[in-house]
Length: 468
Image (tube, one colour):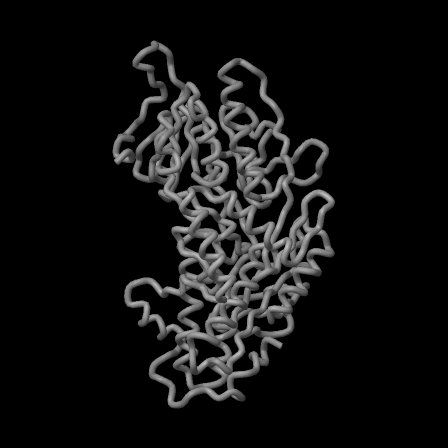
């Protein structure tokens, strides 16, 4: 295992067996879009690349919600980092977590105490869920969606809620079990809400005989005045809302969340009851950014120079979602999007090569390829330049783009097959409740015994009154 080869201290300089030349060490923290792209772009260069990540896989985060809603399996959107760099002779992969960075000594410390020295450092650690200072209370009741484990837990909770509702004789309790609240009206929130509505409608009709007359209720809560406020044309925001409502999703904008507990979500108008609440409302920089000891923005992102490097440390680059970079002529930083991260990864690799050649740094220029969000089957919105798309054509564009960005031929083939199967049959093939003794978790939903009688159409038809 390569991780064991780190030892207590890895040398900062390696020497070629054929040439008495020092080989510069490039350490990359994070195997996401930005970090993996940077590593690959340094293939064949006179550097040694070490990529450190807490997971052994690259995760295609834009499709996490499809795992959470049982459309795709985890292996469809994840790819081993070692496999991605298998053919790159100057790269190695270490499984571990960086806990400290000494910028002056150019040294990293891992959680197990091992140390790595570097000549160039690329920080691409991404973001984490932000509950605006209420993590201890809200995170327990409102699961976020940033990791594969969180996606699987959401899938588990949703499917367990269906199972619990199947066994619940009380109509009011059953309606609560079939109620889902998504907080945050950005692309992820819109996608989760739409997918949940489709999942609930299709699963209940096909798989749960006692619940066929029931009507699941999905509520999307957004604090702002409209959905998709982060760069989308207001007309597309309105179109996305219409498409969600066509799927049966209730949308509430200009609604601030006051509290979240085991009963549901409290807003100014009262308590919105639901058995499951999901959080897509905010993200912030990971704690490693704070440990760098450099200026951060309000969201915990590292403020970088035009070439993505740190002020006073030109050998350290910060890229991807964790970087706060305001392009020349703009007043806003670049958004946390996969295309931005990928382009920055390639750019930083080029800057390292230029630095070694004694050439001056360049300024990063983002080539905007547009933004898009899927709402549901044959429903999406997309914009690039002056072009605005919605409906089926936007959905097809979304499919093509996301398949193209997936790493690995197997992943692309599997996702394409699963999507085609789901589109033609209205079925989702990843409806698995995993985890040891998962059946025992039904008690979390108050299930103690089988129902005394099957629910009737009248008792299961209406959504909870508290949800409007």
